[in-house]
Length: 247
Length: 289
Image (cartoon, rainbow over all chains, first blue to last red; front, side, top):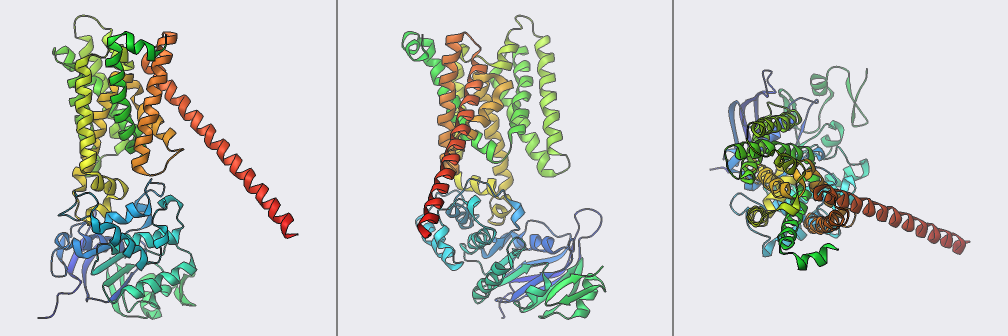
C-alpha cells in the first residue's frame, strides 16, 4: 500500500454565503512535495488552507490530510498565518509565542514541560533566529517575526507545513533567504505555500496550483505565460520573473 | 488622620482594606486582559448591565451582588456567543446590552418601595460601606478567576494572542474565549463595590496602562497592574478620608494621577536617553576627527 498523500482534496466546494468561493477543487500533494498556491485576490487561496486546517468545513467533496479528516490530523500540520491575524504589540516574548506550537488537543492544560525549552531552542535554531528567544515580539522586524512564526509551526514537528502569504511583509533580500530556509525544510515535510508573487515562487517550488474559484491549472513549475493569461487575464505578463499587470 | 493609622483604630476599616486588596489584585490581573485585547468597551457594557441584575434582585428581596453576578455573566455570554456567530456587530450589541441593562435596573428600582439611595451606591460605589459578607463574595470570585487563569494559562494566552492558530492546535477556543469573558464579568462584580459601575472601566484600564510603562510581558504586566491598582486604592482612600470625598471617585482620580506620573517618567527617560545618545555621538565625532 502506498502511504496516504499529505493533502488530498476531492471535488471540494465551499461558499461563505450564496456565491461559491471554491468549486470542484481536486488536488493531491504527496509527502515531501513543495507546492505554491497562486491566484488572484479573492480566488480562494486562503479559504483552501483554512479548509485543510479544519478551520472551515467544506460544503461538498472530501478533504483528507494523511488519510484523515482535517480536524483529526491537526497534530501533524504546521500553520503559518498571515501577519494580520494577531496584534503586533501583544506583550509576549518570542519564546512564549513559539511555545504555543507545543500545545495540542490532548495536553493543552499542562504547564510548560521539561522538553519544551529544548524544542523551542531547536525550532528557533532551524529558522536561524535562536538569539531572539527573549525578545518581545513587538521589537522584531518583519523578516524576524516571519521566522518566529515558522518556528512556532515547526516546534510541533509537522509533516505538512501550510503557509499563508508568508512573504507579504518581508523585503526582497529577506524573501530570497526565506526560500532557502523553506528549501532546507522540504526533505522532512510537505509544504504548501499561498502566494501572490508568481514570478518569485515559480523559481523555488516544484509544483504550482493556480486557483481562481476552481483549480485553473496545476503541475510542475515553472509557469508559462499562457497559463498566467488564463488566470489573471490577457494583460498579465511575466516581466523579469515578476508578474505585472499592464492597464 | 491618615488611612494607615485609622486602620488600627477602626475594625471596619480592616474589612475595607481587605476589599481594596481583593479589588486591586483581581482588577489588575483581568485589566491586563482587557487592555491587551482592547475590550474596555465590552467591560463597560457588562458593568452597566449589572444595574439590571442589582435592581431586580433588590426588588425581589435578594442579594444585589448576586443579581449583579448573574447579569454580568449573562451579558458576557450573550456578547461572546453573538459575536462568534457573526450575525450581529459586536459594538452595536455591547451598546444595546449596556443600555437595556440600565433600563431594566432603573424600572426595578423605581418599583421597589423604601430608600432610593442605594442607586447612587450602585452607580458610584462606596468602599467604606462594604460588609464582611461582600468581602467573602469578592474573595470567592477572585479565587475562582485566578484559579481559572492559573490552570489554563497556556491555552488562554495562546487563544488571546491568535485564536485561529490555537484552533489549529486543537484547543477549544470558543469555550476559552467565553471563559475569559466570564472572568471579566466576575471581576466587574468584584470592582462594583469599590468604585461603582460607572467607574469600573477606570480600574480595568488605568493600572495596566501605568504598568505598561515599566514592563512588557503578560505575566509581569498583570503583577505590576495589581501593584498600581493597590497604590491607587490606598491613595484614593487617603484622599477620600482627608477631604471627605466619595471613595470611588477618589480612587479613580488617584489611578489617573499615577498614570500621568508614569507617562511623565517615560517622557523624562526618553529625553535623557536621547541627550545621552547625542553626547555620545558628539564625542565619537570629535574622536574620529
